Length: 117
Image (cartoon, rainbow, N blue to C red; front, top):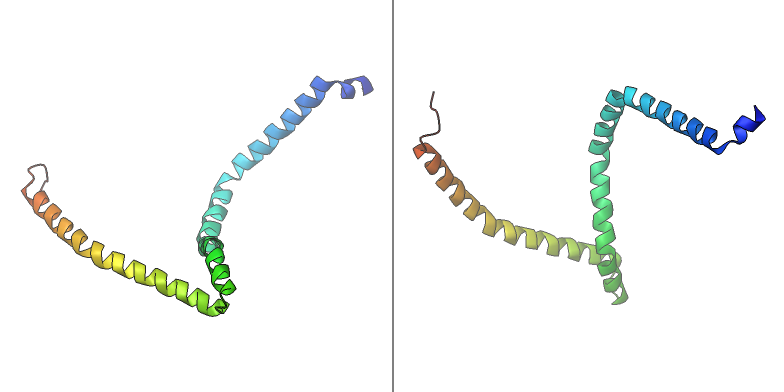
């Protein structure tokens, strides 16, 4: 038996068999794991987004801190700048989007392929 356990091929076969058994149990638990994944995705998504935003904005806040701007004021300035940019973009995009939606509905009304009940 000792000679068998020292055989490299036998050890690889045991590890392969153990890995396949673990994969089989994971496959059996797949419905449960999918529900857990969906729950964690829903709960952790805001935290991950906040982590990314803080990671990206930290150098700017540090630079403003080096210029003697308090950290709280620096964060508020960055948020105000971001919200202003978002507002300007939305003010320019929404009218164009509404116009295009109006055009697409008039095109759909004239399309012969649309079935009316």
